[in-house]
Length: 276
Length: 290
Image (cartoon, rainbow over the protein chains, first blue to last red):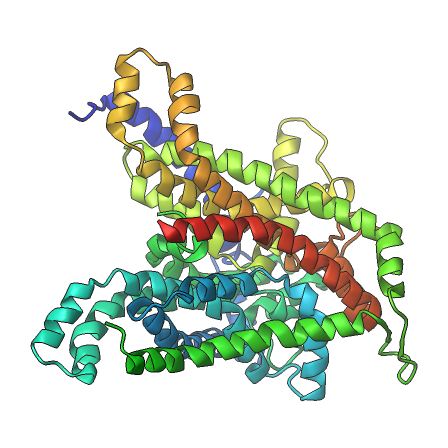
């Protein structure tokens, strides 16, 4: 027997919930609104909330800084590139661990996870020197390599937990029917694994897009993705809030939408299956 | 059913990922360890020599280290306090049925997807600016003197920003845990006359304890490495007031080019993180067995 929910109680929580939600979301909303103001209106006191002259000028201005599109491209190349390479390495590994586990599978998984816990600053010096000597500083190739490696453990883990959920009986049935290993993979396993792979991909693009230790330390003008580009607004000249807002809105909007789609996978991916 | 052949195939399928991760873990770490015993400054090439534990001695007796360690603990502890308590309360609210629940949930988790440099700069300028910021305007409208956040409370300002970024993570995980709570148990307690508070402390909180531990451990690992938020707002200042261990080592490495000293610091940071990681790994390992 479910508890009956009184309308009054529901109304109270509706008001409370929306108030808290809007309060937490407010800095993002405020950034969005400010991006349509002129620089003068952006710093005006009292602040203008909705009734100002909306303008797209900031978006034009940020875009026309010739290097803006370069940073967007860098972000896309680095986040998508590192995720795809990571998947290519992780799919076979997670597959093997899920479908032909040995006694050591668990240890290997735990060890992979432990590499994720190494603080990046512990290896900053050697990595910086390796990058300098190999000419990888400020290149997209170097960043793709680093981000692939730091996110690889999460990718393997997530895929492993998804693959684990594919029931073994289906495989046996396919084998009984005389399916070859190739057919088994193409017709039986792949369709069942695709949703897991897709959500793993989504979460990792988000993580790589927002990564801000290596991107800030290993790039300068050429390979800097949006995280580093936005950081350049930390030493501004003159009024810059509206332009900062426009640049920020463009940098976070696509990822925010992807994040909303992947909210269920977030828990699984970031707790390594410790909370279900 | 695992034949010799499939076992060999499995090993082959795992090897690229395992070998790469192994190299990634071992090569830089060994280099850091090696550098940490050298006098090695990029500005003075050719003067490298073995100096034993001298770098560690300098790093660990430097007053800046203790300041940074204190700041790190404050940053981690303060953020955890806000996000865990806030996360529990938020999870309880979001668990109640109300109109527009799904949309509110999206609003609450949104900060997690904002890149650190954006959230730090937006908060520092548009919200916390002592003259034109929104907080200053709110303070003045109520007749208070606005706070000059980054001058008066620099570390607390950073804690606020970081806590805003991590609150969604805590909320989402605690909400997931809360939703697996047996509703009938709560009902039974209610019928037995347990008040809302005792229901919370004797039923809800114990049920969430595991998830709370996970949140604390995972967040600690990430919070020990907070970097971008400090870099774009304060550069560790004023003085050393917002310098955490990560930022201290970064400054030593890439601003003073002291490879040896920064490496010794890096090893110290690895040891600190490993203490936390040890407990997390054990917790997750236990879960894997079930």
